[in-house]
Image 1 (cartoon, rainbow, N blue to C red):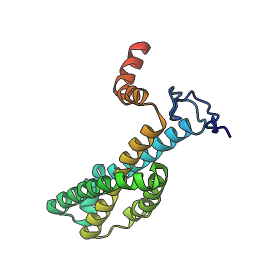
Image 2: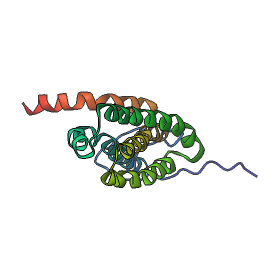
Image 3: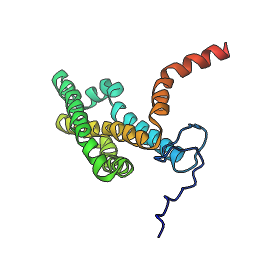
Image 4: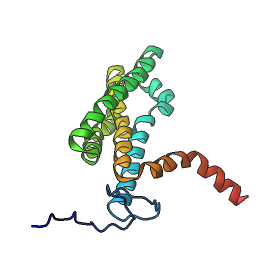
Amino acid sequence: MEPSSPRKLPFSLPVDSDNKATEFHPLSFSPPHMRAFHLAWLSLFSCFFSTFSIPPLIPIIRDDLNLSATDVATAGTAAFVGSIFSRLAMGPICDLVGPRVATATLSFLTVPVVLATGLISSPSSFILIRFLLGFCLANFVASQFWMSSIFLALLLALLMESPPVGPTWVRGWLS
């Protein structure tokens, strides 16, 4: 009996022997590579926005809740501590269940926290919400893990470098 050769899966992007994409087509939504890319950046953006939407509103929140400078500083520290704890936990969780499930689970678990932000009525609830919102930033770890599992390392390095450079190139082309 002949050993069976691994079945070649049909992908819309060229892939290497590990089924990692060797090309990047940002306007494509084809599964699994580009769809995963778009889901990863969308979940990362929504969690990032959720976490960092409160600091610009601190002057208004401070007046409404009668927060002291100590309360505001404690809430900022709580958000930082929440993000550190959750990031440390996210790596092993991604290893255990995979980045897709980890990202989805974290997003679903933090949605009630984002909604509860509108119900804050005391300094202690403000500090607690900031701590729990810090957990959203663990999606950064899951997103990086996810991208490294679907794109070739060299391509991933180029993609990581391009956002800071890209807008500069576009401005140069438009002027």
